Length: 121
Image (cartoon, rainbow, N blue to C red):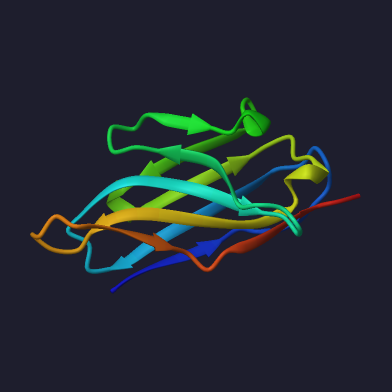
């Protein structure tokens, strides 16, 4: 089994910054895409940022220029640096990895537990 441990959420004032971390553990043979999602109360879950196996990134329009996704493969960790935070960024943030657990090369989506980010003055 593969588990993702998420940390870094909290309360921050508008204009502030936070960095979220998502560290994987367990039996991982290979990985592909990694991403961050968020869900605000009464809203649909949305993709915030993703990074593919080649390091290419993609961002939601609402966070472009403010958020940066990065990875450290040696540490099995993906990060989301969030700058210039706005109240509309308030949500529970989840990380998701696509992983291969064995030589069958079957990909599975693994989700972290989520962390709450609250942007408020």
